[in-house]
Amino acid sequence: MENTIKAVGPYSSYRKSGNLLFISGQLPIDPNTNAIVSNNIDDQAKQSLQNLRALLEELNLDMSAIVKTTVFLSDIKDFNTVNEIYSRFFESPYPARSAFQVAALPKGALIEVEAIAQV
Image (tube, rainbow, N blue to C red; front, side):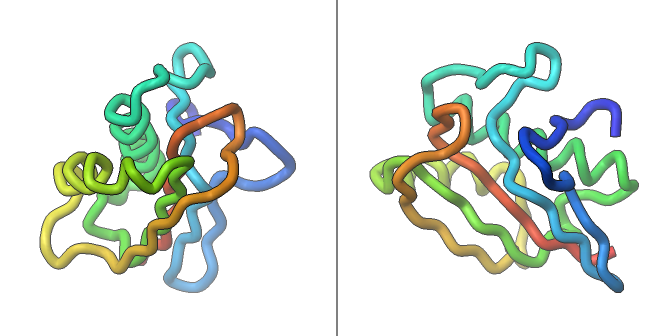
């Protein structure tokens, strides 16, 4: 994986099990700078989803392979904004999804998105 973000701890960016691909949470880190893209939820949501898409593309998959996502938000008030951005990355039938507020995210991120895909 050359273009995707490396794990920020002792874990894998993804693991394959059978015909499922378990993708670790994608933070809004710019792969060129290794830094959070901005303090704006719009920019961060786009970057997290772009990172997710880039990882899939390196595995010769696309966003339609995703069957489930979990969206972690530092503020649930960003839910509608994230929904609007999220809808640009997926088409019907949309993946199943959970979204909820958490106390904090690594590197002070406002969002993190993990996924399960079919391979």
